[in-house]
Image (cartoon, rainbow over all chains, first blue to last red; front, side, top):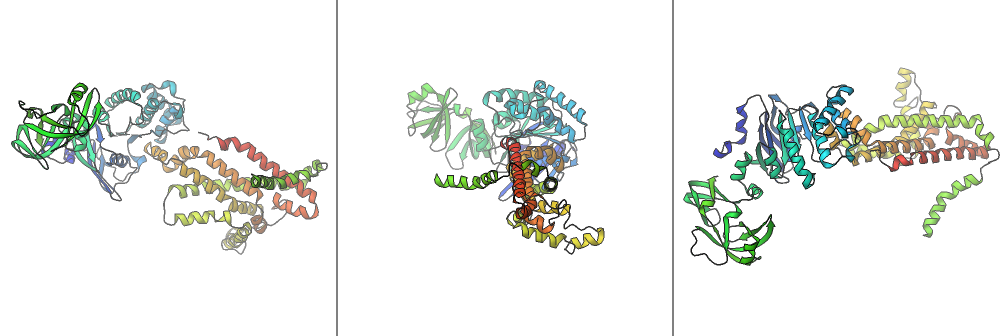
Length: 363
Length: 252
């Protein structure tokens, strides 16, 4: 993957000249500056993942032409679309709250796009009926949006976006408006529809699970910039920012390696299994941390720190402990172990991490 | 409590007086007189035409004020609302100066096309539209501001031009506001007096609308004035009743 040797994300654009999406989206608004390079190959689903306010939705709106670019470029299958108005772009959008036209039936909502793009009334409605059938919504064709359930509305919105046969499908937080149970079901359906979609898709989400289930590749955006991109498993294994590390549930540190020792920028040294030199990241899961009430004597763990409990919360069937000390740590342990250790905020414990359970990689 | 009751009485008493003093016995003859019908028909036709003009010109103006940003937009908005507070007589004088035979624009209309507006039925419509259109613009603008502009964006991503998005998405969604504005404008046009008598004059059958007829009749035939007033009151109540449901429940 290119990001491992530090190549800028946009460099991949040369892989398939003329085909797919090749964009550098620069949008300046007041003090906020978005500068995101994005490439998508035909058939690929890319997720823009990032915290709220990172600029993901602005990037999506810029792709759709709803926000003007103040710099950069936008090419879709070789055509320069940087200044094309939204109605002239071969793009379909599924909005976060769907924005189904409330005065039109589900069928007429889906037929709206084909009508605008030149189909006759009867033809547009026939196409719309076909899309609704594909979404399993034939029985709801005449229903107004307010009488659809969340999951049904989501599928109508998807059908409406696909009915214009876009080269690029954009989805803004496609599952955010759904309750937990519907979400599970719709996520699986959406994945099937995206797999069958031969063009490109970009989806925006702040939910790592949605991103990992739905996308082939993730582009992580923070403060208007791309901080990391790669396949879901690469990003989960080798996070490069605190935000991603928190998302995937890893302890992450940055430091300078000399052999098996990594000296953290503002903390202690860590012993790792990898032999590296220069700036590195060190990551390990909360389950790799063991806690002891007294300083362990016979332990083979090389990384041992005296810490204070900052907070406790249940995390599935585990207790997740936030620790402060020479370095911030999160540790997972069973409820029984937590009780035996007498853990409560302010308690002092010894935390140990085996070198074999850490993972160091070049920064 | 007492001020509220006084307020209610203050608003209802005059209407009640109108009903009490109405010449109920001679009402049928009065109602079927040619003059009443002439004035009523002229009033209905001109108020409806003025409302149509207000819709055609006012809805795009409301869209411009609500959806776009241009330098001086606030000033334009203030100028648009000026006829709301301007004494209608002043509006009539201003219309004369603009569209009268020797007016700023009227001079050219006369010289090039031989068109003279003042003291014609068209002038009635112009005067009524001038006074009534701001009601429609303000009402539609308010509804447009409350409507989510992202529906227009969604329409644009589906390939709709601005005009198509407005016609097929926005307009149906703001229909209740447009209807309310149109009714307000229509009612205002129906009652228009000052601008009409100044700009269009008071010629029976041509420019004498109901309010003008009422005013004139009051001097030589008070009973006729009361009958004409009753007719206007009935029309107003019918409009209110007829459109109440459409106002209260959104058409979505």
